[in-house]
Image (tube, rainbow over all chains, first blue to last red):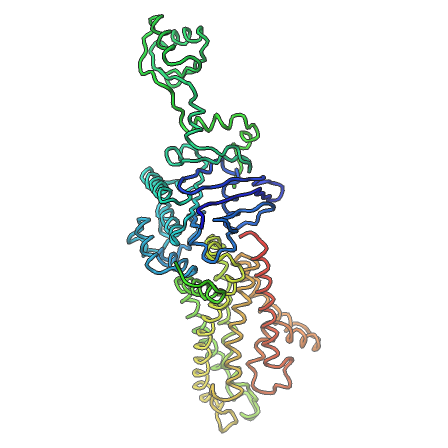
Length: 309
Length: 272
């Protein structure tokens, strides 16, 4: 059983809206793959098609080389949390996990193990209706882990969580990937994936905009830029611009310089007697890289404002 | 991780999952209790309101006492309808249908498993309600002049026609619950499905009562799910029924099968 998700030419239309448009990608083992795009970009629909919940108009999705709906014990192949609120409020958390275990012939001990792993503890005996969002997320994650699957998929798992919860999920995703599993995690905020994902699939209006390693993306976005601090901003900008550099401000006293190397910047500013400090090669944030990546996709920006799904 | 993966094993797991799901909702126990209790209570009340004093001679009443004692199912069936609808409608209302279909991707297997556990639960509660109704009726009837001396032997589930009426009534409740399950699956909306099923059960007899033409009234009684299905309760003058006891139950079974098929078709064709 390969730990992969393969999506080939996936297409889905709801009425006159094209939700997913000829989407192809592969999610590989041993890494966390971020699935990023604004709300309405088609992330959830793609995940639902991977699980056979929505039928694609064209294309196919394979989990470990097989269509999801042909799997006999799907929970042992792919674990997913698509919607943390999808639990019956009157049912106890443990019972929710128990019926899932029964559906795939999993032993009762797995229920106790995932309750432990997800940190549900004694709350597992309570009815899910009284759960906070954070507890529901933990229950959803426990359900995803139940079959000890090689492939995991989470739709907006950190949405609405407190920093502690976000850190916990990030650590969990990392450790699952470190065990060699394929982990696909969606978010509409690139910043949520900062430090959490190894690979990125960027999607806009149902189309794939980028399929890249996070490292490569950051390197490209940071390319040759120098960051420095100075109290004499105006003079520094004049000096550097005269030398052919492109300078942008960042915060009250920071400048980002594109063009000359750090050594040349030091030489120029020292030569003109402009005091500065904290000069370094600029490292783009994932958010910046994302903006850079998507700024040309005009139709993508047009859609970034609204749309529900 | 687990043993074989044959179709029987698959089906068994789906049934076990649905059973766990059904019994871990507090509403299930209440609905089953209501099903039995309302059937007994209403049956007893109706039976208690009838005595032989209004007849010229007690034997001349020609009262169908088993049918009288079992009349509580007309109201008790509401619980069966709600249980059938909620078993699937609750999944759409709470969004757990996606979780269910992720665990059991074969959609017809999910519906079949739901049908099995709903039928089983209703059969048990229905049997309790029917036996309770016969026991209550037995005590009440003899006090109201329906005695063996007057040609009314005490009610017994071992007596041929009464046994058929009793078993048929349990089957009636099971079929009504399955009809509701099918409607809930097809409509995906709990309020809508409960309304539709109760309408189909009660509206037609109501209309039939207002129809003047005998031939049309007979036709409505013959093909309406409730009046046809409850023909199975009759123990006297069977030749005067618009439809035979088992044939009538067959009509209801056809409605239930049609509803389940419609539900299965919708479940298979539509996105979850």
